[in-house]
Length: 392
Image (cartoon, rainbow, N blue to C red):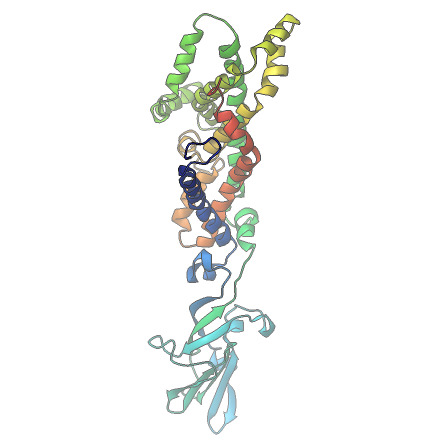
């Protein structure tokens, strides 16, 4: 009964479980970047992204207003300084905007949770301090006690979830932010789009010739293409850069376009040739009988039928070029930063903005957003293109 046709094998559940596990492993980091990109600095430092929908508990330090400017004479030698730590600390613009709640507080760094809200702290010799749950405080004492700098207040705050678009505004559109990703984003598009289109055009012509045109040495060319698939690009970087510098196209977009084209052509030709070989021979022979030229057959028959393979390679080439750092570092050497791509910009930001996790998370998600759109737009062609030529 186990081998009856149409009955699922017991291993199918293991395959489904493994596929689900892989999806979760890949989706969770992306989801974490997306959530973190909308959180504030305090929220990121106080809790993980998985707790973004829950109130965050964090420890903060504030000072009361300057006694010399804000103290009020109560008579009998007593003075009062009052206000709100959140308004004076710049967290809220006014009392109506306060959304935080103090759970415990303290007047010393050694005991930051010594008092409950509204509890009076005895600071000695008649000096007292009171803090409410919404941040209102009253500091009472004599003239000798209420002077100098404001008293420090250590609070543990429960803050509601706080999401903002300010991170994207800062990263993409703020002209004063020298670490902004907007220029690097367009530089990456400038590199990626031509570096994807050029090899597709060249490989399509080459694949058609290797698949349907008879000429001497065709088998050797096919073998050479297959052999180039296993050649690591690192071996060709220095000789290719030297060649580009000798002919005057180094350190610019043209050089990096040609480099990506050369490194992507073997896979493109191999993938497209395998797909074109599997196309119906009768269609091509009938077109030749009707008087169609090779160029007409290629443009009107082969290219429309080969769209799944073209889209499949476009996904690979676009993702590889967009995420590339090595080729960009070698062929886009520019100290002024005018041609800096996003991968290199992220590396530089890790050093200069290593503590600004919200900026790093936003920049990283911006860098993967476009590849995600490209992949999900063309993914239905991916399997068809990868299986090209595997079944006759």
